[in-house]
Image (cartoon, rainbow, N blue to C red; front, side):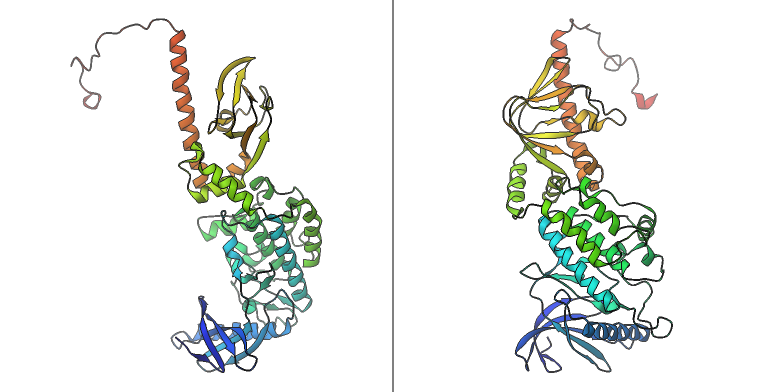
Length: 449
């Protein structure tokens, strides 16, 4: 364990990346804590060492010029023959990648506030002639007051320099899932590439998934260049509709249709903040999760899958005699009764009555071509109903879709067996056949034929 780097006293390691180690240290002159990024130049790979030195010098040069409350401040930089280190403002917080998982999403109003501040920070950087080029969750730290701090400008593109003579552009840098179409095609970049990446991050923080997913880089690149992202409101029905056009504009493949600058992006985000609940939703989410954990329908669901179910569902508290589904309608809405009872009927005649943990409306959802409803569902008493957004389920993870299909098929087969028992009671006496030809030994087993 290192004790000192230059004059700075090492306290502990904060993390390790592909090219650098970050330490928490103490500045003896100021008596304050700082973060130090240490890069060692290896003799075994001279080309990589030259690249690291270039990136380091870029981060130092750009970082010293940027002075914004939402950008990590650079205090000092030292280049030595075998290593270099960057002394930065220490942020006592965590990176945003902690809040990208479906079971750890932040409340909507907090996400919008964070991205709003990032928009303004990137707008400021652009006015200083800087493009980050690697905006992703791991490069944005969040302090205790929800203030984001953009870090790692080592891949930054300095627009104030002559690109033909003194370029800080390094081909192929960035994180593929967050790259803009022009970046994956190695086209010349401007500040709009950062706004695209920020749009991807906003999408992920609100839904728990990326707008484009693939099993290999080639397919991912194809989707980024050619395909439209899904509706964020379809993936998370609790979001205000005003977010869809904002994210669509941020993720525009055509540069002329994308946001012109971060300030314009931030202005649109501010227009939807009033539509959001300002209280913290985490406790309500936890209450809903714990309630679903006790519902028999979701017994086989993993915790992370159950959190995803919460994001694609709407909780409905209904009084008695409320029609959930009406015969003759065309839609694929279905859901699970959490508490209460509902009645299923067709042509005015009761089919059955269902209680907690039973699913209703699944037939139209499962049918590949016919969304028409063939039964009516009405509540018999105050009922808590979890309505599953079928469009969001279609776009959800493979694991959740497979889990739903398995449970729905099991429920459907169970009801079919019960229906057969009822029909049997109404039917005629069955014909009694003779012993099976196979059992009597008169025919060989099928495998021998």
